[in-house]
Image 1 (spheres, rainbow, N blue to C red):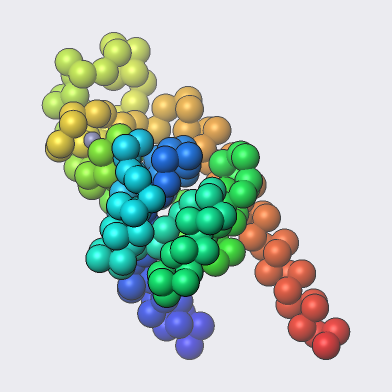
Image 2: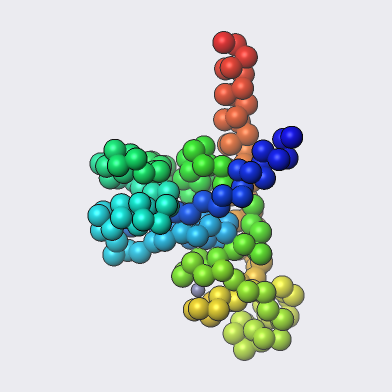
Amino acid sequence: MKEDAKMNRESVELKFVVDTMLGDLARWLRILGYDTKYSRSYEDWQLLRIAENENRVLLTRDRGLYWRARRKGLQAVLVTSDDIAGRLYEVSKKYPIRLYVDFTLTRCSICNTPLIKVNKEEVKDNVPRPVYEKYHDFWICPRCGKVYWRGSHWIKIEEILSQVRGMINEWKRARTSKRVKL
Ligand SMILES: [Zn+2]
């Protein structure tokens, strides 16, 4: 029963549109596999229009814009944290996103295109030699050509995601204990 509920929730995949001040959040959501629109040139009216027309959750640091979205009945999250862990936590509290990387879902952090797994030989000329020798799994963005692998930077990504999972678990525990007391 629990599993069914989980699957239902995940079957409607969330999509986001992110304001110009939250570029790092947009990149992380793409890595986590969410279709996320972001451009430094988006004006407020464009963000609202995209959220409305494409049924995307608006993520913004702008309180005024957040309330404009809410008054229009749009889905939105006001993101106030200054660091990425805090920002992911704020989104997760309202929309339970995956807090782990599944490369079959990952999108290019630069252009939002789903990645394709490639044979190692195909990226031979696109990555530094030591990287090519050390790693075996590579993915490529079919649109902009950026190559991805789980390099040393990956440890930091896993650490941050683990931190956010911890924050969410703590938050859920606090909510449950509050309910029990009532
Ligand atoms: Zn790309």
